[in-house]
Each structure stands twice: as structure tokens, then as C-alpha cells.
Length: 55
Image: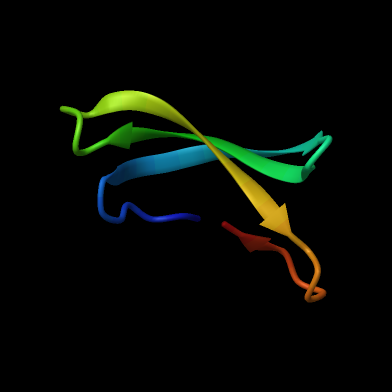
């Protein structure tokens, strides 16, 4: 389970989505730098090294 870190508070609801650029992780969190405003995070996965790495 992901933990809060930096501006990202309460991350969760992870889903994997396939896009033309590759696989994406889509999740929600509250932004600690924006008065806790809910945000949507979208991160590209790199699988070139055999293990998925989020950037």
C-alpha cells in the first residue's frame, strides 16, 4: 500500500491503463501543497529493464 510522501497525501485507487505511449498507473491523492485538494495522478510505467518502474 502506498504511503503519503511530500505533497502526496493518502494516495490510493491504483489502476493500470494502456495508452499509446505505454502502460500508465492512474491513482488519486490529496495535494498537501494545495490545501488538500483532491488530484488525479497519471504516471508512465517503464518496463524496459524487466521490472515496471514508475516515472
